[in-house]
Length: 339
Ligand code: NAD
Ligand code: WQD
Image (cartoon, rainbow, N blue to C red; front, side, top):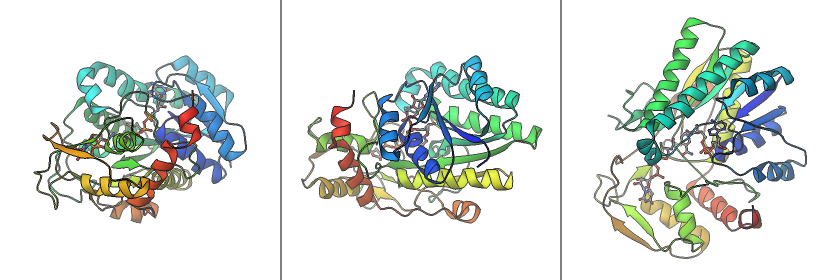
């Protein structure tokens, strides 16, 4: 395979799973990460899964000199850009920090790619750009309505990519809008492993299941949904990793960009998740209904036609698979003994 693939932020939750999918497909992959929200030990566990060493360079995508050195040392055919801060709550407290890291990081990375003549990039975007959508399932043509600095940083990043592609047809961007990733690798050696207290439902439920947190707080049971609780489009991280492989292969083979949702197209409620995780861990998980969380929408669900037609992408794994693999990860020795 001509040229290596650089995973910026590749030591994180989605990046580490995508690393395995790309290596399995025959790509030579380099991870570049500053470990602001991941553990360096993940590279040892990736090496254990693959039975081969992992090339990982520690650095910040805002460091031009570090990026120039990396592009000088390696022939990079494409970049998959995961490196961003992703907490909605934190972005409200530190909007400038989010713009600097997420938008500034992307622009610095693109400038380094430009200097190196590397013009293929897969970008991690988010359904959060839709804000409160008019329709669900939500198509890619829906209006940009982000409601927080994090979501707006993703919109701005997408606009930078749009601008660059319009100015120079030599660039090819695969923009992937993820809905709600969940689950873990079947080995139990890698999974969602945030450094801070997670805001997301699935890692919270996992912490209740292992006894770290007493009970699940269900934010609202008066939404216009079948059981009154919030509905989301949960997608297994293994399916998501395969979506990145298909996006990358499409960019490299066609030179044409694309923008697609990555989701199942099906919605699951908070109570559905609690039921599925209870079945996975073999105990009825305790929960309490609380007030709605500010900024939450009743339903987020992907329209998936474009991912299917453009990339041939369809999800294969279920909510049960997500919960079972998450439970395997949070109870694994790797998780319990990692530094
Ligand atoms: P993550 O925090 O696990 O991974 C991000 C990785 O990027 C981490 O390893 C972190 O250390 C690294 N990083 C952050 N800023 C960096 C910088 N300036 N320089 C170098 N490395 C840096 O998050 P994730 O869940 O794997 O998400 C990956 C991408 O997908 C992010 O861009 C996120 O916005 C996007 N996304 C995530 C979700 C989700 O729910 N997990 C949903 C939609 C979109
Ligand atoms: C899911 C559902 C909550 C926690 C977020 C970001 C989004 C993207 C994906 C990065 C909602 C309910 C949650 C809890 C609960 N990340 N919930 N109790 O809000 O859909 O999306 O992650 O791009 O940008 O906004 O995911 O997991 O936080 O919530 O009841 O302790 O679970 O109300 O209905 P969300 P989530």
